[in-house]
Length: 77
Image (cartoon, rainbow, N blue to C red; front, side, top):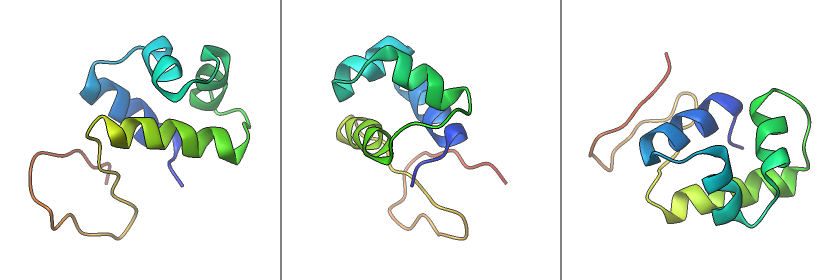
């Protein structure tokens, strides 16, 4: 599952505001802000946000996973 840091980083790479992500995911902006603030949100909402960012070109790399697809990316050590 996508974590808070990945969500923020993906938005930054896309140049999206919290409202842009909310619009793309068809969820409320308050849900995005709650999640990024470290507060609990429904797992389905997180999956919906991740799906919207993936559709826009984001590839999420999980802990201990290699990025074999190439291209630019960001990873927090």
